[in-house]
Length: 360
Figure 1 (cartoon, rainbow, N blue to C red):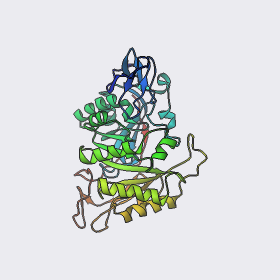
Figure 2: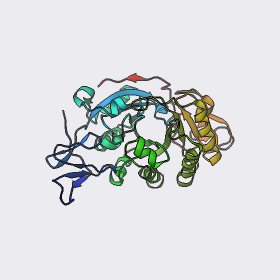
Figure 3: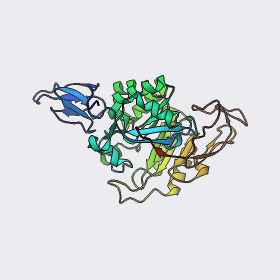
Figure 4: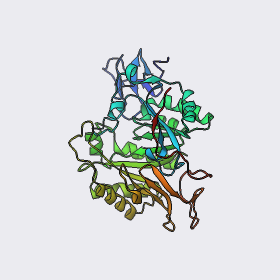
């Protein structure tokens, strides 16, 4: 069993007056680590003057999900995705919906070692077309994510990164060279929110990742913002986000506004009202974005995909259950308008809304 792994993305700390440290350069936090010290993410550690990835292959939460749960609405609809994460995270979001994993710090009890080559085999056995790095953030286990992605590609399995996009350029380039699709979790459109609610992080770095994906990568990607009452749900902030997305990413990037539920350190907040999600969607559509969705609620009308040319219903969704499907490859069957995304030539997958655990 591989308990440690030589990490990439670091250099010796040359700051004068400091005891000997190394600097992890995987994410913009750039933690300066003394001997034996772990970074904010918990998984990257100074061991003997070298950076170790202590969580390499230590997988938590293996299960099979519908791809729509990531959420990805324009990437092989109706197919299954093998999902997992690891312990730790490089953000400290007070509202984290997966805090039991992202804040876990006991690998021996919380995680099982799974070598990269086993992951695509598990996906195939579970009837999944893709593998998703999710629950925490693949940024912190980027070396393992790349190894898994290479094994998946060799086996004909797609890979998906569900990430906050808070990652430095070198690691970002290496990761997305191997990733087929991504959902970028844009926490808010405010630097103050990132600093106060996410305990660090930064809007500018996330926007850089979005621009990189649009301009330099071949990865299909969609954007999600979890709307938290009185924190990031004002009309002005939603409008500013939508205007930026339209200007920098174009009108065809799929955008998801999803409902918050009270959890971890924000249990005092009320759940996101359904009307807030619909209001955000209306703002986005008026701004000129063509494919806007609401999530974590039952709302077929606002969760389905419509043709940007003629308005025809293309993919009907109720939560993660698909109904009507009228795409022909990537075109509207009614008017022939091309719909951006990655769609199967054989039509909708048959995985459905099921979810089940997967054993190693």
